[in-house]
Image 1 (cartoon, rainbow, N blue to C red):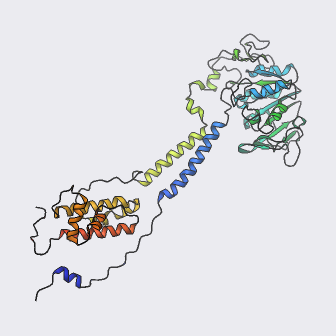
Image 2: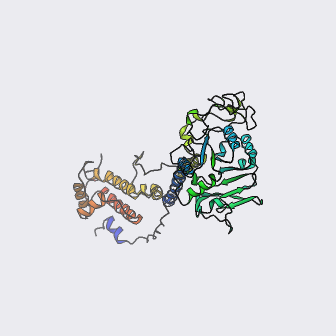
Image 3: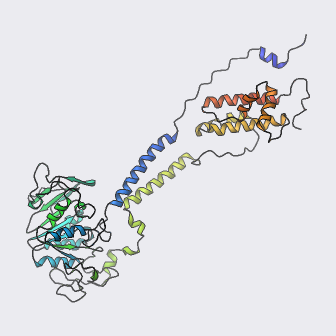
Length: 472
């Protein structure tokens, strides 16, 4: 009796049932969280940069200057004041501006109070009677040194157009009766003093006195690019034109402490060629003092040794213009984003990109490759590279058995493999050279099919020399 071949006995004998492999759940990819958060972060950063570029910098040249025609200048406001018969006297030196207020009723307009040294700000307390001081978005130190009974309350992202009332109370300033809405509510103020009047949702505050002070919480009504929005023009003209004469303090650089000189200038000189003809801002003399010597309001000389100004303020011209183009919070945010990216790269502990094929140091069976590298491919979601690796390993083992070169065409390889396995050439070619699997189950089916081909072709047919056609 002829014994059955081993393969037939194996097929006839039922083996133990293979346990069902639980289909692994698909893990959430990190980019599903990273992409939405990245889009939100990009939107926030873009908004911050756009707002920083649009927001005027009080330290920049030409900020709310009566002769500056740019979008952050104040030439259109100066023209509107002249059309109403208001005299605009431009001064580029704070001492001359203080002296100019003594020539009669006037409004001292300080669009950049942060440029004044704290010791200089204190001199604003001694303005003559019948003088109005208008400050644009002053800081807490400025409010403190001027001695105003005001505190800074809420601050908004951008100025909002509001009506003249505050907490249901009308605005008591008669010069603003025609104003219905104005964009002044960016910085709000609070006070319990009876001498303080709050208007426009506390965006405008007036402190009564012999020399009254008006504080405006936003610069939008005074800027060339925003003056015609809402009722910004009537508000700005009404606040500044109530005295019939405006002394416009147009600061080109920070004012040092009394007795200090600005580096790179002669004491008392202040852009003599910048006078617009409405005042004496271009004179080099200090009123009654000697030429080139600034005088204080009481006529005393303010000239120092020239060293204190250099110690109080660094040379702005030597700084990096790119650094000055954005505020400090922008650079801090950019640094934090860079650190987050570095931490994410270290956390991933691999290249942030697609998997790169690398040659293995030894030849590994396709089944062992699946077992050894399955988790890595699964984490990366690299079904395509995994399938190509399995197919390459199968061809490496099968081609020598079929006496075919490594560059044999796919149809010839498929025909030779189909002759050994008994399958059709077209399904075999699709199995060996087909597309990438779309799911993990398809990848698993492909690996099992390739393993069957490898085992079938690698075994010599019955009745033949096992060394014939094999590698020597």
